[in-house]
Image (cartoon, rainbow, N blue to C red; front, side):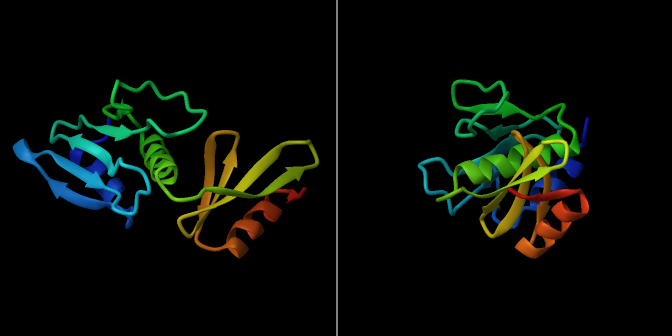
Length: 149
């Protein structure tokens, strides 16, 4: 299990989130750019490591959420935490447009999606990589043996 400090470091690496300290040492993180009524992405992150991320708008996810759409992140790995936060932000963003589908010689496909100014590569619902520019994402895909479909 990641510590409170490790989770804070991961969450604070998302510049689009704003930290809000609340009672009992707990912390919320808001996505002020949300186009939906929901702005809280990380909810009640507690010094004991427990906390929640909003996953209620994430399409095709396997996250088990409560009645408020929150998924418990207590036992999440770094990758799982990064993935759910990124997906949560994307789900609350104005548009998530599938830009391109890439395929390799074995018939496997990846989706290249531009979200909030970054380029994400998805294998199904799983985030495979994130790049700051289209060029970097395309280079990565070429190096991995994919070509534009």
